[in-house]
Image (tube, rainbow, N blue to C red):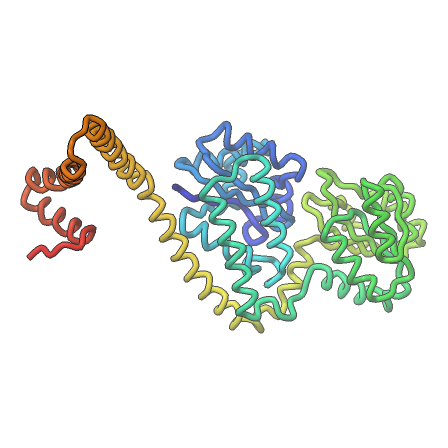
Length: 416
């Protein structure tokens, strides 16, 4: 078993790079099968969020797996190299535990990443690329995350992207209850943001999504209205705040659309918060004078303020993780002996069946049962004792000392 993880995240790569290696949810299963089928990878799982793209795998050739990531996204390995981290064995285990516990997030202690990791595992299971090693890793990861959140204050009073978005809006507009808010997308992030903004009593909420049923569901829940995704451009001018988070591989709001909306608004400010990776709002929009554009990285920098206040909880969480990493590595090490144990049992089972058949035939011939059983036990004992005895007799002096120590540890014997 050779555990290996690699990828990029918000700490190692800017948004412009992260959006180039993001995996669309609808294509994730195909990507996983491509990695396992075409590369020397036995198991694989991909975690792709707005803040990170990470690949966890069981492979003897990590370099080939890393090359696959660049080639799959039609990038040069050299161009991606400065942003990559490679995590073998224990480092990969620790990283998975930290990510799930919210220690490696842009927002310290956030819980959304745990759900995203569970989604990644379900995708790998559906694709047939999750085996014994990764299944054990992620099940242990989820257990560690629960322990960290139960026994530390890592998630206490944690800010979120949604709460930061509300804070930004309150800095730009005197009162949110006078604002009209447009949500583009209908995923978990949009739902969180809608909940936070709805609590401030805005003038009205509008939801646009590729799937109209999902937009209507959110509109009904938050007492808003729903529109088609194609109607976003025409509706933009009627809103003060736009929050976008879709899975589109291309921007859904362009510079020209925003320019037209600003003219119609007579240049009243328009706050646009883009929480998607790849971005939903063209980067050029930020150059427009009355458009205030914030990306997921911008919100992350704001959210990072005050993290030091929970440094004690971070240390407690890390102590839990360090202990769990040691336990998991011990399990991995023990798994390395499984083939030998299996072969040893199969060897013993062959001998048992052979001698049992001989004994049964002897009984069928009418031989004395006591003698048959006695002979069976002697033969099995001799066969079991022959390999270690022969190894001791044939060993050199140095080898013999090592063998005797091993046998004394395996069998409860008195060497004196």
